[in-house]
Length: 329
Image 1 (cartoon, rainbow, N blue to C red):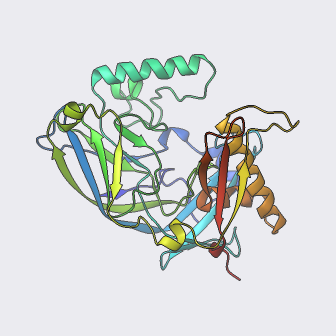
Image 2 (cartoon, rainbow, N blue to C red):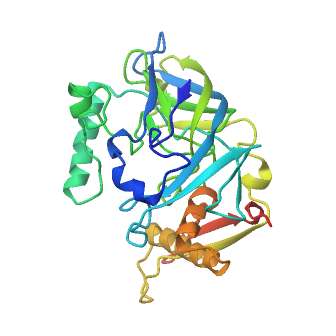
C-alpha cells in the first residue's frame, strides 16, 4: 500500500517557514484505505503484521504554532527538511545530526460502529466543553467532502479503542498490531509514516515521510468479545530497532519532576515532570550550540521519554534519553 506523508504533500524541499500560513490543516493524516477484510465481523480481533515499510527519500519535521507539547514556549514555525539515504536522515537545518531509520506507521486503525461513533463523539465533545484541545468533525479537506462521513466523522488526531494515531514507534517491520473489530469487514486504514521518532514526538512531528507498506492480516474469530479486549495490543518477536539505538547505547539523560518554576510541588503530576524533562534536555542541547527550535526538533525525533517512577511521592520522575551517536563530526 502506498501512503502519503502526514501533511499530504504540502511540504517539499523548497518549503520555508513563510509557507506555513498557506497550510491546509484539514488534510492532515491522509490515510490509505479502507481495506475490507473478508470474514471479519464485530467481536473479532484483527491481527495486522507489518512485513515491510519502504520510505520515500524526502521527509520533514516541523514546529507548528499552537500544537506540540510546549506550545506556550514555541510560538513560531520552524521546519527541518530531511534527506533519507542509506537508512539515515540528515538535514542542513540540523548540522552534525544523523538520525537512524526505524520506519513505522503512525496511524493504523479500523472503522468504529455507529454506536461507538456516537459514544466517542459524546466524550470528546464533553472534553472540548471543559476547555481541552479537541478537534471536532470538519468537512474541510475530508474525503468524501459531503455527507455524514464529512460532517460527523471522527478526526484522526487522537487514537481510540479501534486504533488510529498512536505513534508507537515500536511498530516497525516485523511487529504485529491487534485491534478489536467493530464493523463487518473491519475496514482497515493506515498512513502517517515516520522514518524515525523519539518516544513522545514532543514537537508534534517526527521524521515525517511518505512510504510504501506491506502487511498481512489474520482474523482471530470472536477473540475480542471472548477476552473482552477493548484496546489495541502489539508485539514484536525480535528487536524493533538495532539495540544500540533502541536501548540506546551511549546516551545522556535529563530528569523531570513535578516541581514548578517557583520551587513548589505539584505532587504526582506526570505532565509537569515530562515538561521539565524536555525543557532540561532543550537546555542541554542549547549548551552544545543548537537553537532552542533545533533542540525541540531533536527531542521530537530522537529523544525517548521514560516514566522512571510513579511511586516516590510526591516527586514522580520522567527521564529523557538522548542517544549520543546521532551526532557526527
